[in-house]
Length: 261
Ligand code: SG4
Ligand code: ZN
Image (cartoon, rainbow, N blue to C red; front, top):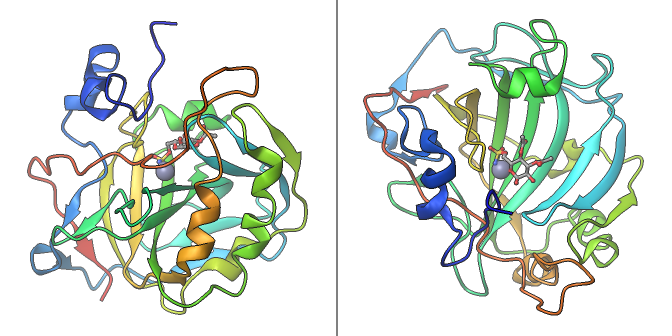
């Protein structure tokens, strides 16, 4: 099991380059976004989410995060517009979060973290036959990132948090039908966009990142429910709480961040 990675002291982000040398590559994610250095691009149109017929399948604990998977055999739920040349199909969404009272987002804005970050992962089914092929090729993926900030209770997040007790341990999967992630999004979808990578191994440099400026507001209690998950499997003696499952910002290395407004 030499290829295991995690978020701990010995297998965390600073050790990933041992097995995944691209960790030190030229277009790694996340990054610290400096709004004043982002270039307003008048050619960037609005992001359009066609999620009306989206079909969620299940919710799973993969030992790194909690993931909700979608039917992606046709173009029933796609993101388009913005920096994208083609519609990209929704494959899954997942979250990254911190420990109690800690920061947990992956992207930061002027050095400031949010409590958590939601990632909606989409792939280019016009250019690629499979998600796997898209995920390992430049611009094969489009990930929509949404910050979570603590405040009032979020009206719909309970639909996710109520299911978490069923996927406490690594490897557990439960049916999760009829959930449309549109209910999680903030009212404005103004965004920053840049070319980057997956934020976990294999860290492929295949992602067009679209980071929404307005956060969604969730309560501390709702975030706490994510911390009832564990990184470990049910059979393991050790139980480690799933928290701080985020990668810190990487070097920009000359990339430009564009702004939609
Ligand atoms: C999380 O670990 C997800 O659970 C992974 O999803 C995801 O991998 C990974 O993050 C990287 O995605 O948007 N943060 S990210 O760059 O989407 C992929 C699954 O393993 C390939 C299903
Ligand atoms: Zn992610």
